[in-house]
Length: 94
Image (tube, rainbow, N blue to C red):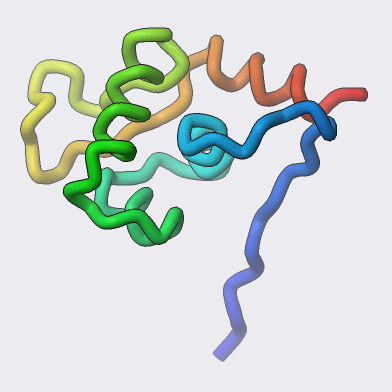
């Protein structure tokens, strides 16, 4: 069985490693649920830091729901918006 490659992106030194920035980095490669983000970031699922970071990113229009009409759906995932994608590309350049 082939081991799945870990995808990474290189950021400028000035890019702080906050929870929000880590979430943006993970969503660059694929849409993820809150549980998937929690597992990747090794943060307890019910942690306020994860919930607050997601809320902040949605409010800043950097990420969005995959099912905007059903924010409490058990199938809900998050994805980068164009603004979030552009921000990451800008941080990677240089």
